[in-house]
Length: 103
Image (cartoon, rainbow, N blue to C red; front, side, top):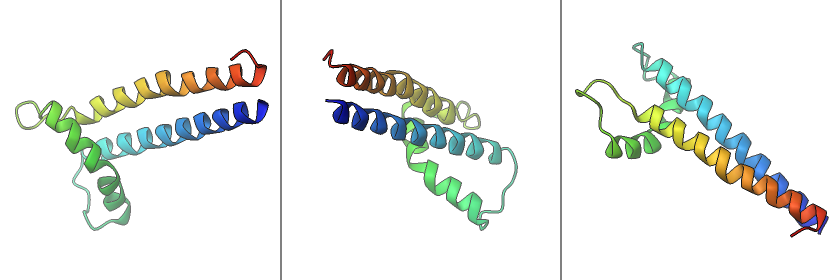
């Protein structure tokens, strides 16, 4: 049973790390939106490509206020924090229960 617990623990850790990395990418995208970045810069291109599908979906839920204030990064960050707190913590608890045999 401990092998299954370790597997679930590893999955939870990988999901948590990926979500944290995506949070950092969203924050970087929000910061570069305050300046006029060169769209041909590979880093800027990556940030836009990696975040635009998720931000576009969030913009459909809450469109920019007055056409200028875009709250979609905040919506996505709140969703990621919720997923990290709910899903990842649940997986960690499940892994602990599987390893101890309490499940």
